[in-house]
Image (tube, rainbow, N blue to C red; front, side, top):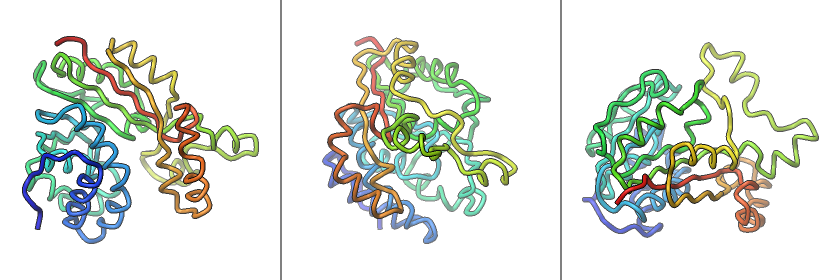
Amino acid sequence: MIRPFMTTTTRSDIASRLIELAAAYPQPLQAAQQTDVARLSFHLQLLLRRVSAGRVADIGGGVGLFSLGAQALGLSATLVDDFRDAVNTQHGDAALEQHRKLGVDVVSRDVIADGVEFEPASLDAVTSFDSMEHWHHSPRKLFAQLMQALKPGGWFILGVPNAVNMRKRLTVPFGRGKWSSMQEWYDEPVFRGHVREPDVRDLRYIARDLKLAEVRIFGRNWQGRMSPNGLVRAMTAVFDLPLRMRAGWCSDIYMLGRKPGT
């Protein structure tokens, strides 16, 4: 049974709530959600340190725990996604049952082809994690619409994989470093993998284009920490903190900024 809403924003409390929410997913999806709790707890803490109440739109979050957690932790969450991944085909509406039950506003929409339809200055925050790299066309028009939907002082939070992280810098000279497998690109009728991974300079470019204020760019290493390879996980534990000294070395990079205004 899901407990009532809570307002605490400590990482351990957020993780505990996400573990509860993951247990309410259809059984075949629970393990994948539980594995992602640490990363999404971090994402939610990023948000809740800046927005303790109000409305957040999460773009491209799929069936994951982020928008569900935001709603459970006291925000009003809208989830926008095209819901065309394999998990949606396999599990249908059951994968989003908890989102709707808890009150998440679920919007099925191709944001690149069709944009978004939020009222001006209606959002306290916009988030998008590990989605932009899958989009086949420029997000510039979409991001401009989202900026219009943000209230003055509202937060724009973007998380993406780093195209030039330290692992790729070391492995590409040895012929390893492709974004997607051949099977994912060639065998499937629709390619849903990474189209273009950005780097730190790209995030700065986006921040300038959106005229964001108080911009902060930093990195983490979730890909290594969540790797199925035990050696990779062990090495990440050793090198995680040194890599964070420069965002460009990390596997995952983030951009945070505010819409100018009061």
